[in-house]
Figure 1 (cartoon, helix red, strand yellow):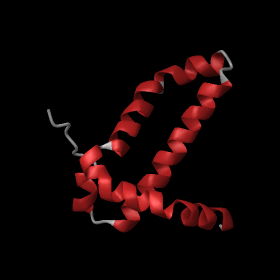
Figure 2 (cartoon, rainbow, N blue to C red):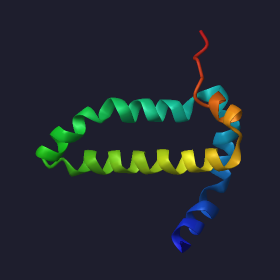
Figure 3 (tube, helix red, strand yellow):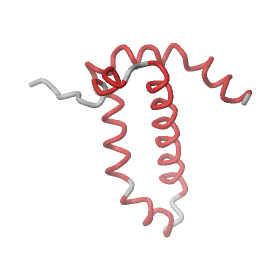
Length: 90
């Protein structure tokens, strides 16, 4: 769609930078870990009508899905694996 094309054009430099730096920084993996750790709170947030938390979770999931789409379309399976095997150095 036209909106997706605009999103791709607006984020191409950020995505390229993330693809390049993520094996060293582990930022995508960290975002996924934080999202997964916070999903337990989603049910409580929905019951309490905490729309801010739900909105933040929705945005985080959107970013994760979009970045995964970019990563999958731009690299091989071996390269993709490097982005999820990051280990913090002491």
